[in-house]
Image (cartoon, rainbow, N blue to C red):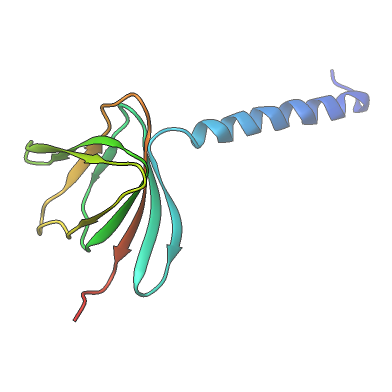
Length: 125
């Protein structure tokens, strides 16, 4: 049975386990919110190899800034797909998705793709 003398070691061990668990949660495909107001929503997407973003849609147009580029296959719910290539350091404009259309993003490369997404919430007049 542990004694009070063992407490610092137990706390250290629990801290290491907690840090490792958090690190595992921070790996893999994910969206990381960055900023939001009435006009824009900004997030960072990290798409790791063979871990696609789940089916989703974009109701608003957006700019994509490639922080770590690569080729991405966009797979629509209908089964149709297209491949897009984003060059590191370049920016791209993407319109809103057509009504009712959803898609998944699949990175079939060997390295993670990282993009900053700036979505416009309002239509320009």
